[in-house]
Length: 271
Image 1 (spheres, rainbow, N blue to C red):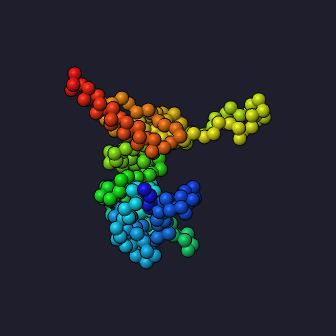
Image 2 (cartoon, helix red, strand yellow):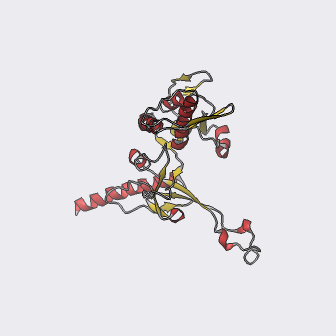
Image 3 (cartoon, one colour):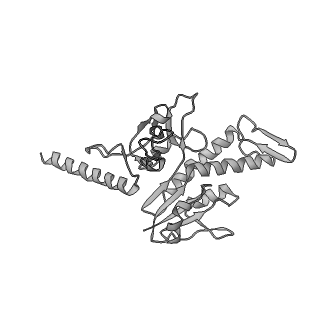
């Protein structure tokens, strides 16, 4: 089973470049394409860019996973396109307010309006759910975390996408919403000369956690990190997180809970 990855993430995909070269992952890099809205509408339909236009092709049978990187970067691209249009005097957002804009010499700066946010949010709702129709075994959407601001009361950490309106709604769209967090070594243990001669390189390595359930993040003032494991009724709870982070392991645990729930119901009916 291979994976097709549609990526708009500005950081690129160097960490998986070896998997791309081996053909395990088919990377469709759309970062340089200028028409963000057209590209977004195309990738959620599984289309491919041939260098000049988007083509509709049957998805190969060996592509079992389709992944999008991700909600946040597509939101940024759509919002950026709207800003660029407003720089040229074309405001597509409507709304009650006019976006800010000014020119410094030969350089024009423009902002986004409430109407722009509403447009992008509506497109996220439509296109993400449209992607669910693609013929694949697993569909994955990634997102950057939106952390709570100091002056708001909605103390949650969840997927970031064009403002905060959709953050709490995103998990309801997906079967599973799991949060990945990197926990670095505790550098407070390392004094100016090390601890008993222990060098920084010898400290415990960073830990990658995949949170399967909602949890408090003490690095963000106790904000609740959103996660949705959809543990079956009649099954015991999944662990709060697994480390090292592994989607394969997480899905194996979920499968085990489904089997456990079924066995418990059968046992109860027999009794």
